Image (cartoon, rainbow, N blue to C red; front, side, top):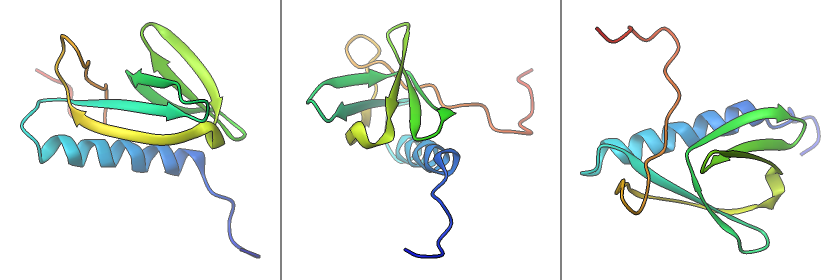
Length: 102
């Protein structure tokens, strides 16, 4: 749209994190399982998601690795309850200004 601000990757990732947080709060599991499907059909179980490095790319953390992918390669993000044996939970970032755990 002419004159519209460029979409923010940080804003996109923050909204995804918020959606995961809301899903977790409304379901019985303590954590949510997050799966991403890429354009080629590959499915990845995410441990975390970051807007770095930017410039149209995101970092997906999976099984001890970090994959840097173009945002356009993401076809679907699926949320479900985590089962640590088969479907590991997603690590939401700590909220800014959150109280440290005692």
